[in-house]
Length: 194
Image (cartoon, rainbow, N blue to C red; front, side, top):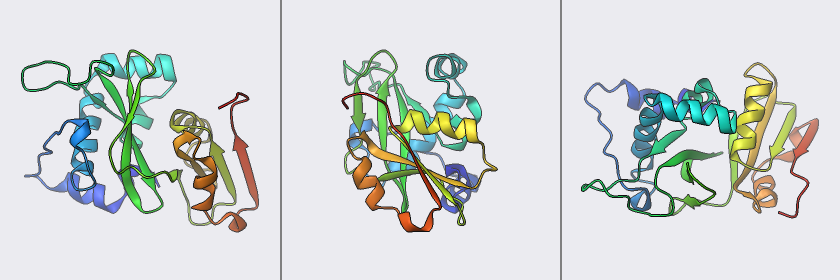
């Protein structure tokens, strides 16, 4: 289950007249979230500089960007000014729950500033979920999950999740998942105070 394989995504991308209307990240809600994610993903896939940066700094490759619809928001208003002085350009990491697309995490390309779209719930962010998965991997955050997905690949029989709001929501994420259906549960968390 990669994001781009979801029926809603395939259907929307196949509409020849469809053009996403980009919104400012702070205006995004569940009604326009899908269009925003696709536009941000298109922005990143066409920007070699940020694709290279994402690979070098976060070890996230272009195939993963495409599969999970990771994007870039240039955070610029109609006059060409940055809307949020702390976040300027931001990577857009979509958050998919067991129910589909529910929000985005935005991370500044120049620092550690993180924002989330309004209405983004604290839940399990699901990255890979075959129906008959035997192993559940739980990572600390979104970037950790992308890196683990790249390591494990699409062929393994596993489900991969993290808390949608980082490690602070890991317990909530586990409540969203039927744990008793897995033969193995692997927690991959950092050894720090977070």
